[in-house]
Length: 424
Image 1 (cartoon, rainbow, N blue to C red):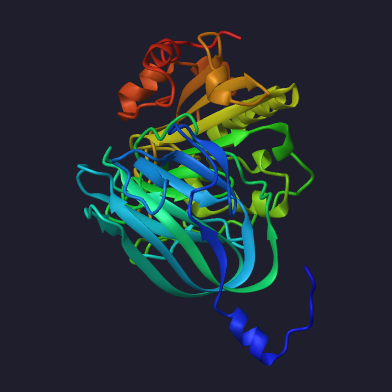
Image 2: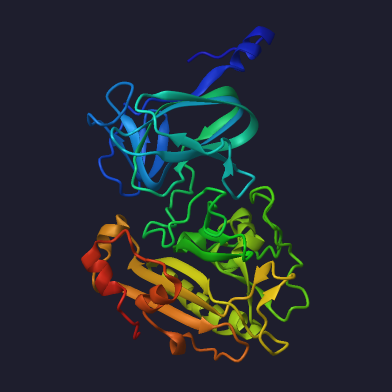
C-alpha cells in the first residue's frame, strides 16, 4: 500500500472512516465455552457466547453472535483512535423472551470497563440498529455484555466503529485471560439495578461489588508466573471513580483509625508484571476491612504459598470473598461497620484456589484429582498464622454464602470437587 502525506481534505474525510467492521461472517465458534475467536476484524474474546447460524438466529448474512446468561464478547485488541460513533444490530433469538445488554469500553490508561450505552432491552424479533455518537480518544477496546442474567438469548450483528486512527492497533493485547472461566458464583451482572451484586471487570481481576456494603462480595483472578514481574508495590490506594453515579464511593482514608487494614482481595504481589497491573489492585473496590493479624499473617501466608505453586510450574484460578458482619480488629471488641454504616466489616474471609499444571484448555484439564484449596478464616485479630488450620471444602463456603462455585464444570465433576478438603 502506498502512503502519502494527507492534505486537509483527506484528514477531514478520515474522521468518518470505519475503523472496525465486524460482520461475524469469518471465524467459527460453535459452543458457549469461553475462548478467543479470530474474526475478520481481529481477535475477540467470547464467554457464554457463540457464532450462531441456526434458523432461530436473527442475522444479516449467514452468521450472528448469540449470547446467553451474563455472557459477553469484546475486542481483544486496542485501536488507538479518535472514536466518533459506534453502531450494531441486535435482536432477540427467535421465541426467546426479553434480554438486556450494554455496550462498554475501556482505555489503556484505565483499569475498568465503562458504559457507553444505557441498558438496551431486546424483545424485537428483527434486527434493530443501535447507533451511539461518541467522543473518545486513546487505545480503546469495546465490549458487548448481556446484563439480565437469564437464559434468554440475544443476537448481535454488524458491529461498526467510526473514527480516525491516531496510532496503531495492537492485535495482541495481553489481557486474554478469563478470570471467571470457572463460573460467576453469584451471577453478578453489569446492571446498576443490581447494586448488591454488581459485576466490576478489570483487565487484571473480576469482582462482584456490593454497593450497600462498600466492599466486594468476591474477587476472582487467574494467576500464572508471567503475572509475577519486577514492578514495585505502588501503594496508591484510591477510590474507584468508575462506579455508577450516586453510589457511595469508599475513599483511601475510609478505614483510618478503625483498627482494620485495607485488606486486598486480589493481592498486590499477584500483579507485578507491570506498574499498571499492580496499581489496579489498590482500588478500594478490591479492599475489605481486615483484622491486621489476619491480613498480614495467615492471609499473606496463603498468598505467598499460592505464588510458590505458580513458580513451580502451575497456574491457579483464585476467588476470595467475604461473609457476614462483625469483625475484631486491633482495637478489640466487635466492629460491624465503618463510616456510619457505609462500609460493612465482614465476620470472615474465605478463599478458593484451583491449581493446574501450566497448559491450555484449562476447563478440559480439570479432573477429580485436581487440587482444590479452600479456607474460611474468622476476621479476628487473634487468628493463627497457619492457613492449613482453616481449611474447609467449597461446599461449606457455598452453604454459608449461597454462591455456586465451579459452575462451568460438569455437574458430576463439580459434585466431587466441592466436597474435597486439601491435605497437602
